[in-house]
Image 1: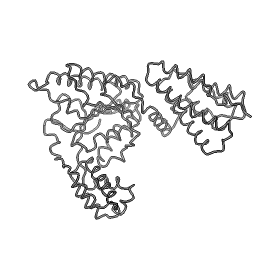
Image 2: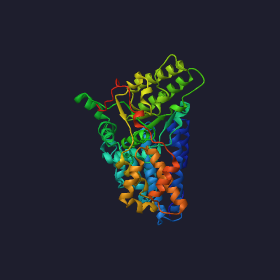
Image 3: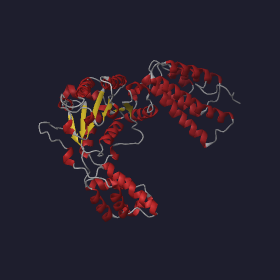
Length: 462
């Protein structure tokens, strides 16, 4: 019978306690987050060891926990290698495994798979000693992975670090790291904007997935990835959603500067807060292997045309100047700026000139509205008859032309709630009731289009 202590490689609790303590002493928030993940992973390992000691290895729960632990520890090793390359965590685990394998036999199969997986993150070559125990030694270079494998590991890393918020605490609430995993927005979730999505795939995402392409295309063709993109149009039409989908498709980190929180009653403080947020972003961009995406929403509340006679003109001018300087510096950093506005024509000309690309995000047409209805009703059992009634769907789509995406989704949800309260199927009559009850306005697209003919829109990347 195997001993009840130290039967798991890397299960030495003294080692983990010291490792967690060292991480917590580190000033980096990444280290603190890694310490918390290691503690959680150890708790999973505790349960696995308990089940092994009680001979419960035949249970499905045991197999699921083992596979879960492999994924967790693999992702943690990947994250440590990426964020804290000088940490010898992986080597320590492998050496513990070798030491314990000398003493204990047989090994449980999942441990062989685990040590094989994490060996690729090791700084040393353990191929000979691992082959002694018939353990495959995976490639130590990430470049030897397939693109699909690399994307998979990047996704796991993103999930592990999705709550890594501590580094933004000194931005005075302006800066937020957006979670692109939940909700899972990708381009398939964005109805319409087909031309824009194609352009983004070809001329932004391709560069983000293969950063070396930026330098190659610059040298060979003199074209490169745009570093600043301005989206404008009516509210609720998908400017934020397309930005989240872009980040998810590219596997890039996404940060938002909340312009609504930038105000202060003290002169200079607002400008300093904005500068602090950008300083944090510059630091993050320099540590990132691929460009980070920074989303500036509702920039019309900040980068408005400077007018010496307007109220608060001095502070507004300082803020705009700070933003312009930050925009200029961002183009020298490993980052992409995406700004969104509902009112293009109030923007400061100097601010607009910083964007290589500009795009109007307008209302959906009838066919796109039909797709949005189908997408939102497809999983609702009480809506299946309506989904099979092409005439009713066509009629509803026509009724909803002119509403923003957000308003249409609100009307759909209101119709479904009405059907639930009435204990009926979801019908077109429920939609008519929702339209009347919601009392939502249809925005005038022309109000949100550019009126200044001197400003060029061009949206050809490169």
